Length: 189
Image (cartoon, rainbow, N blue to C red; front, side):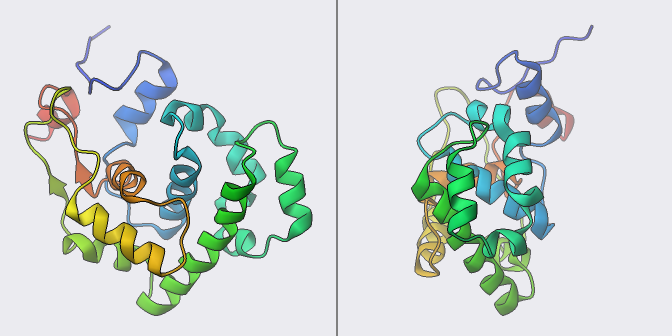
């Protein structure tokens, strides 16, 4: 079996390897996928991403297949149900934030035609290719993540500070932060 060098944060767990190799850093323009990742990143705040990856399928089932329209209509009964679900992160504030964020996401779709158009406008529809990313040199926020976070907060979003937004930008490929020695980066050169 061929050995590949991956980003330093990628463990040897098959789920992490698959996420790194097939998903992380690949540009996403589909609103449904953008909302899924936004919801997952908001739950990840303060936790490890691996915790979320392990529970991702449970989140999908619990949160109506990440259907933004359905989540926007959640009421007290659904919140109570989610708080009893051992397969997800049972944080009442984050659960309520998922509903608030769904409503704000829909408002952006109405204003801009799509969430994708809104989000990618912060990078002029370009992928930010950071160079010299190593275990010792990497970003956790940037002026762009600061601007997105500030604007999202102004629009009512919760649990999306600049660090979480930057992780989101990496996940959806707005930023290419694969390390210099990672096979994903070297394959694209």
